[in-house]
Picture 1 (cartoon, one colour):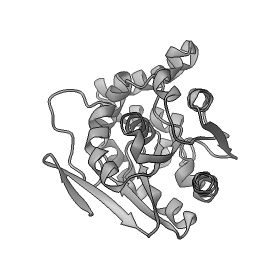
Picture 2 (cartoon, helix red, strand yellow; picture 1 turned 90 degrees about the vertical axis):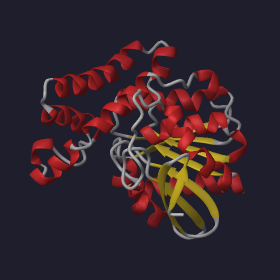
Picture 3 (cartoon, rainbow, N blue to C red; picture 1 turned 180 degrees about the horizontal axis):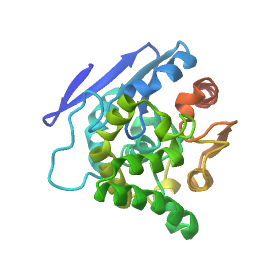
Length: 271
């Protein structure tokens, strides 16, 4: 490491520390650097692997002429998982949805699973929570619609209202920051495309053999909270934790609190 060749794709992986291995999968639009503050808060005793996913950081962009799916990203990471497992698997948002796919397909490689508001909104439909599924779908469709109309500013303003309120209003960001984020628009469209075809079902959750911790923010929106509650309720060894005063981006904004919950979960498994 830090760069692996996976079937012609350059996969960039940050590595730090020594001890039990923790594989950290970041949210959409971020990179493995998202986990720096949490790694600092987690402290010594862990070897942290934080890859950049497709379209992010130093990893190759998605170039195939079809929609990217969750399983495509999971396949990109499967050799990293297998070569370093069994390990503790952690995923946030889009990375949480990928972590679920990896845990379902490679259960022998996962000691513990930690999901932070994972991208698994299709579970709401399956559980009959169509109201909350439609809440999520409205955000997704509004983003796509604004982009289709050539208005990425409005698209990202809506996205920030939904997921990044801790940063402040979109229009209050420096122009250079807004321009850098708007360059991520094609990648965010691919993430939404992946969510629309997310194959994870409650039956997969029921088959999880590892201790599973699901974390949500106290101030997070109803769809994200409900997804977490569903997973914690259906995973055989599932439990849920709430981060006070935090929202969807808790791993960045409340890294110390998240690290404490994560450390207790990993330690409980190792106990």
